[in-house]
Length: 509
Ligand code: NAP
Image (cartoon, rainbow, N blue to C red):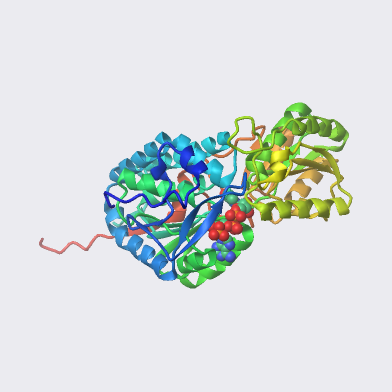
């Protein structure tokens, strides 16, 4: 790690809003972080504030050769890092964890400006992201192997868990901090070094984590962030035989491409991909409570959440009452710049996302959907920024894209069902299988849902389901592997089996 460096964003490149939002302006970095140094490519790319379309700064684009150098640095650092005692790695990670919590307000304000989420959501993400660092630092001290009752005479059989090597981590913009720490903390705690490619919409949140890792004293080469053209960076990571594990969070189509690209080097791949979560309201539920929960599960992060309640299923006999409750709640939502404490729903990530939301809405309306309620869109939000008003649609049919696709925007859809068997079948009728919600009291019906739903995570009577101790991940085309919990180490480690036989005793000795 270098001790002294020049601050690398001058005022002409970073805008006033972002500079004045930070107490500690050195958290704002625009160069890549490789082998403990800030590295510049030849090109720079702008980042926009989705709340007002202003350029907030520029970040560097590394060349193919510079990305390869980062992989080499991580590979060189691997042996030293893995040989530290788990306690020593844990102490360094806990220092990083504490620095992140100390900088929580700055990191959250940075995220609001770069990503658009509300300040409350951003603070929640920083705390959530940091919690993985503490969890894995502590878990590393307990990453035990096993002893195995032997089937071979006089042999001792055991397993050791070993770090896999350099891990390539590719992350999305919707959780620009936590998707990095959820992977990096597990990888680093178990003894891997990491090369991270953050999303190009949100590089500054990632680079701020690197600044704090540097201050925490994480050794050079252990934590690297490479920014650049998506296909270039990803291809170099996938093709490198020094990269032993690839962990991706993002869309299912990109995940499939990366799996194919990584096949030639037979990497261990873990994939956290898209979702199309059902939200099942059981017949005995309090409808007002269920409507509030469904609204919360739908509009977090402006609907740009892999856990978003994409399809809300309500018993036919309760449909109109549920819609009334939901409509009242949606009309009270305040849309606007996430920095204002009154805002419930911030902008979408960019104008392309707004266009996609509009296309989904148009497709649904042409096919017979009805707008049952909408939030207001203030004049300021109509003039600038990537806003889309939270909307409730009814009269939904399965041929509508908004029903089949992960809509990833503030479009909520409500559908009726007539039996539990039918709603479980409708819920499972998707290639996705990440998360599902169930609201109700009847334990028999809840159990039928828990067993029948083909989703990696099923939450009953709770919108909040994720956190450091749980195995986060999906079934079907929502992914491979799990993050968080004790299972999070599996993606970054190998189980080595050791057979310790006894040499025959030499006679006379
Ligand atoms: P995305 O378009 O798949 O991008 C994710 C990452 O892949 C970014 O770093 C992106 O780089 C890179 N990428 C994009 N196109 C690529 C290509 N052609 N080749 C190589 N790399 C490429 O996803 P997103 O829009 O950022 O995120 C939204 C998706 O992530 C949703 O589907 C959501 O459900 C999913 N998600 C899943 C989880 C989970 O835990 N299961 C959590 C959060 C999000 P650039 O930014 O530089 O283009």
